[in-house]
Image (cartoon, rainbow, N blue to C red):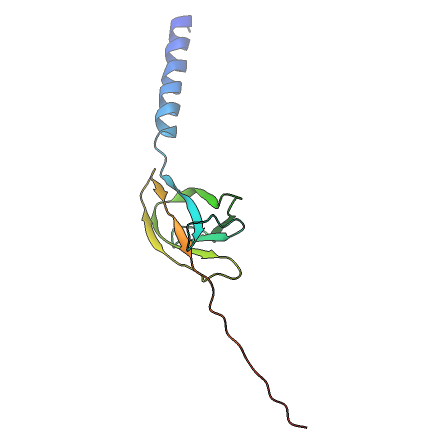
Length: 121
């Protein structure tokens, strides 16, 4: 086999490999979790659930309230955002292949409940 034929074969393989890697079908959901006054909420748990996802994907927000969920198959998602002391939010979104979907979530304060127990002696 000549050097030219080897070079053509190698270039052909590179073209096929490059084309295959460009055809990704996953997407990304990212954003910030904020309080009612638009302050960042670090430490919030963001969970993604979808019939197209095996199990769930979970991340914790950074000190700036930022999060990123990568490598997600396209399809419908329920995103659950929780943080003790705040109301849980569960927005539904649809992620397209290769999409970077921005999702900002605002959490309001949790409802305060009080229970009084009276014990007679």
